[in-house]
Image (cartoon, rainbow over all chains, first blue to last red; front, side, top):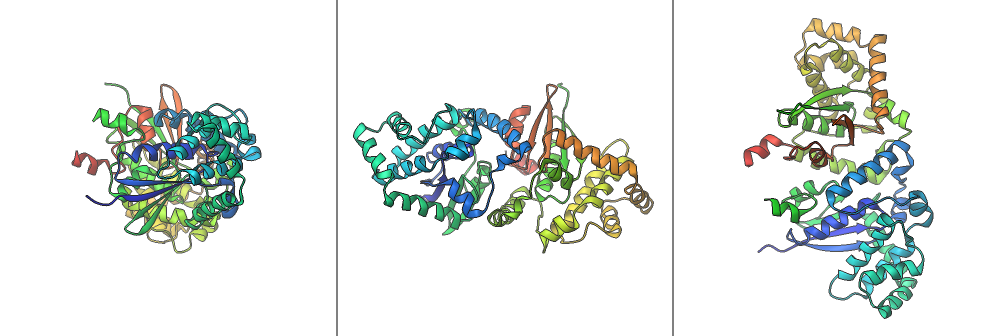
Length: 228
Length: 228
């Protein structure tokens, strides 16, 4: 038996392509011989740190992305739906408080990342499926409740999420992504023979599988396996 | 027997990702039930028309693309190698004369696109594998010679390539790409049930196969079939 390859997934719930990458990696953690490490970070900080601009500012690119996300949503089996005002949701409201909240969930959770996974998914569902807010404390609480956290846990996480400790943790994870060469999310870092192999976006899984010596079965491996 | 689906491939030999897309589509024209239409166009015109900026201007993105192209080169079986000065090659020297030359080859060629395919490939090989010029008439002649054109054919194509007819043809193909929503190359337009399905880049082939009801066998389908 070979040891599991460690794969880090840097993401932000404001990013729809991150949602696709997140679901695929969460599925493949049960298919490939890997240890998945969820690395919630802040996309705004990565864009600023890398001097990058959001792709949606070019009109043709924005139109294409809308279409692309619709097609990928169906093919990946992820219920993506653009918010009514994507620019307001992504750039004016943003995700700083949401990602601090996710970082706080991770800080509190011991011996696993089930809560981080479920809370992240519920936040994506709010912004990228149900056109709901993810900035207000009540929004974060609602997402956490749906993710199965108790009232007292939520209270604790909310408090922790505004602490200096968590602000610094989110900054440091974001910096770590930048150090790996990030200019956007999702960013997947595969540790292969002690060397990081970095993949940007949600369209390099087939190549990633090739690099880590695993087999790509499409974005819905359970369905794919059922078909084999 | 169902009728072949028409697929248009818009490309420019200055674009390395276009080379990957070009080789994949040229391979799949013998695997899928499709009619591939090569549409040589001018990337500079698309970028300007769409108000887009080259991705390589963000330093982290440039470093990533270099690494990404290296990995894809091996995985796709396309001998990509960056020119010693990519900025000079891509933005200062550019590809206007080369793409007019390809458009002229296409204009002359009757009943097929073998010459267009081979000349395009030889131009890519020059700029994106051998670090050679693709702007001077002698460079274009050399590429065409390697592609199997005769001296008299080359002379004719060179003359035709500076005509108003060909300049207009390249403009019109470029405009057609913009009308399909292009903001970069390669752009693949699949005509499915009378509706165009547009794909940008060289990382949507699996999704494209799904959309046109074909099977994706990886970027090297011959190798893949041999393995099955």
